[in-house]
Image (cartoon, rainbow, N blue to C red):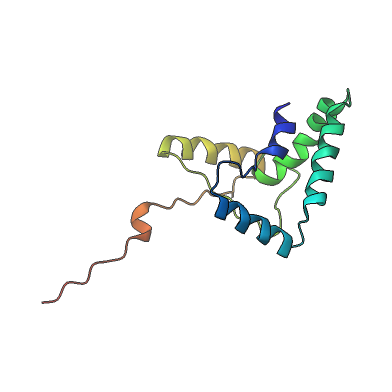
Length: 126
């Protein structure tokens, strides 16, 4: 049910009249017609009736996770165009880097970025 519910997350009822109208106009301009949305959502609801849906989703999960979680499938070394990042403290970085080295190879390195890496230096006039 959780996976099915994800197809219905976008709703406009809480938006203002103007925002709903603008969103609908943008959808139509972008080629997303209301009947297409309705067909998609009905197809998702029809899938829900399949007794094997949970098994099918579970069987696909590993391949999807492997593309977004480095090290999940060591045979998948990289995904073209992918940029990965993690947010955490040093203890988590050390543990994750150790995991990556054990699954992807000892040369794997997890680069750390800190907020100070993005600070704009203050220019002081003398």
